[in-house]
Amino acid sequence: MDAALSDDNNSGGVVDSITIVRNDAYRAADYTLDTTTSGTAVSMVSGQIVSITTTGAMNTGTASGVGYYTYTGATTITGKLGALNYSGGLGSGFLYQGVGYGNQPAATFVFYQTRNTTTPIPASGDYNLLFSKTVPANTVEVDCADVMPALGAPLPSAGNTNGLGQTAPLRAKGIYLERGDRIYVGVFPDGPNISGYTPGAHVYAQGGFF
Image (cartoon, rainbow, N blue to C red):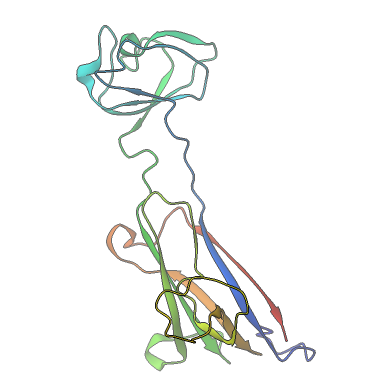
């Protein structure tokens, strides 16, 4: 919020919407090969994906094991799911993506605010924790409205009143910022995100000046 204190036209601002979107996205499998679908006739073009959940479902075909296979051939391939050659160097044109293809672990993002500093140091107490938000496993996008601080202005419109006492007003959520304030966001390094969330994420914020 005018962190460089170079614009005198604004006293501050408010952020009233924050959305987190993962940078990675994966197509769902077009076909699933198991004991019930082994005899299913298919016609596949390049880029389509087969998920093999059990190699016992194979008939005359071959596979490296359970997991995801992407068809990369230049021409359309036809046959039955359990009779295709997914591996073995037979030229069917499948790329093995492994069993973890498309798995997105849960990731927790932490938001904090600083004032009059561009190099916040945790030990010096020059930042304030605002809130944290977890993007659940295999979820691409989340809205942070449920965990953002409540603003002072009540809402005149109807909304979710669960947890409010009688006559208690609904309130908008958001973050007031004075000139010189900054909001930072980072990945909380826990569980599968011990080194951060490698694919990364975009954080979209909307608001206005006052």
